[in-house]
Image (tube, rainbow, N blue to C red; front, side, top):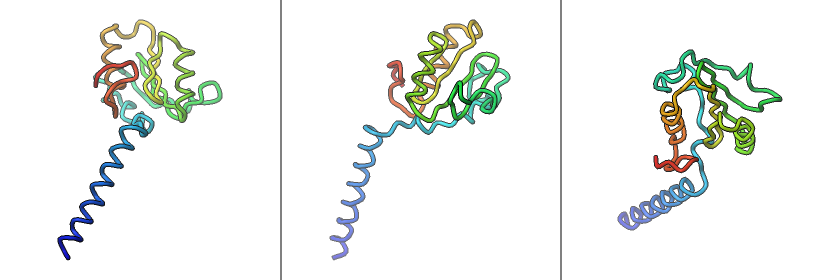
Length: 138
């Protein structure tokens, strides 16, 4: 009787784990909940965001409907509530922007080398995903 109960519990746990795995792989994008707080002090940027600070109050509003913003001498990161808004902002800013999920990185022209920009894009684009938005293996 005890073995049968244990087998049932183990079976339910296994089915739950498989369901969670399928949901995580097919439906949930972990970049949606990525908080920009880790970049506000510049530590997470590998030195590529000198003078990093919160800028939500000054940058997010009717013109840029973001929910978070962190700015520095080299780039500004914006987080949007809806992916479509992030896509529109990235398209508007063109070459100076990098889109990853709900986050847009807007680079200051000439502030980072092409190599450093690529490295920063990869470091942000590979968080909580197997493949970045631009197809990089993470």
